[in-house]
Length: 408
Image (tube, rainbow, N blue to C red):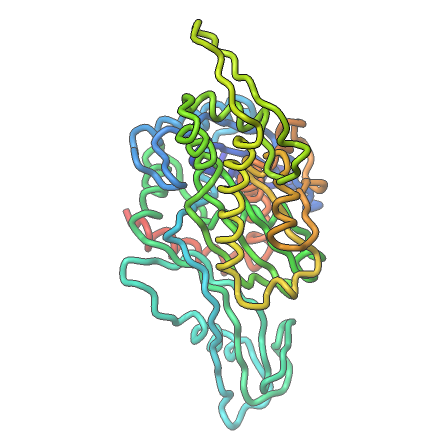
């Protein structure tokens, strides 16, 4: 069964995330009433992925195959195609406005006029090695006045379309598609990871009021900013939880495995002095002496790296945009579980901090509500929304994109 197969008026979608820390395949069923049920998940530890990008094709292919077999076994579904998330610091989001002046004989805006404005807005210069991932309409303007809704049927002389355009290096995106194709799996669409995460982290009201989603994983920190219901900024920083672990390793000289464990079980990023008293003892299971580290040092290492990461995200956002965020900051991704991370984020952004849940998605085991699965589950919601929004038109666009990136 493919990821878009109809089943008694329901559809099955499959999301594939190949992350730095884990490779995850989620199978979801969208029912006739638009409710979503997660049928199951296949997951394995990633090998051959660095900072969100494939560095060893053979190892990653093995990981994807293991996740596929587990997902098929759990769900009793024959998976043939997937919605694939991609990330990496090479992926960039930019805004652009296209202006179209209606012919003198026309006064009413038609579908053709809207398409003309869209084409002009999408026509931006990107590096020759890059390919488009998303062209997302933000809003329309008629004769200089903002019109957030559909402008078709309104009277005007000049129509402007604001777009958020996401593009990245073709070969790097190509590697992810190639990996899936060699399983073999068809790729229904390629989705920038934070765009997928936002579909499960935010509801429509959050997007309208303004919200920032930060998805911090093992090797990358992805972000997407919504203002007035539309994407205002998105991007990726090649820093994540693994860098915190490595910092602990470099400062204390403890093995990486122990650094990861002490980070998760004892660390705190809040900066609260009361949580940095005393020492942490790390037992050794191979007969060597126990390791000790001052809790203040451990927490300073953790907070230093995570604060730097959040400030890098803040620097990437458009000037003045945080003042328009009415909801707050939503933290997701596995590394967002770090104790005290919410307090740290509040110190950096001075906004309410949330950890999103998935109240409208059923069938998820308790462990699966973990924020590290936001992207994978978000792919299912993204697939649903794309199919509901002019499926025939979208299918043609997606087909062209995938063929452009991986034409074989």
